[in-house]
Length: 188
Image 1 (tube, helix red, strand yellow):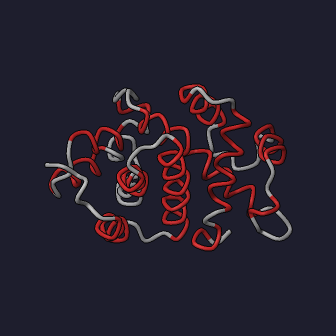
Image 2 (image 1 turned 120 degrees about the vertical axis):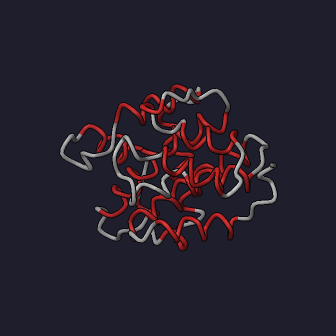
Image 3 (image 1 turned 180 degrees about the vertical axis):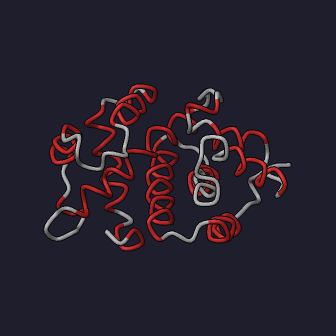
């Protein structure tokens, strides 16, 4: 079955059914924002790419282990009629699944996942807590501070940009700008 008929509202209902944490919901929206911006840049299906990003971690709260996430989510999506292509894109964002990132969407999702969370964390420590104050330099400086947002893999951020074939600073700037364009919805 083709996923093109799946609306954001439908995907959002799945996300909200399985995710109650405010921070995880915000993470989904931030990653969606960055991925949608890349879809537009690369002239791809913005809604489809956005839906993959929206649902990439929807099962994490219920199944937070490597044995559970994102495998259980993929099973849930299969039951709801999502295609293998959609599910593989979701699975590919976690290296430990063994699902390779072949398509551009998969590379973009991986590149945006950790970075969107890190940019959000950098925003929260700004005096105004506004993304308007966040600059590439402030993100790269915080990346060097191992104590800051220690759960975020700096290696994944760097590798994501490499796999995407975009210089790290350019990728960071692109994601900051995408998030600035959606700052009200993201609460930033």
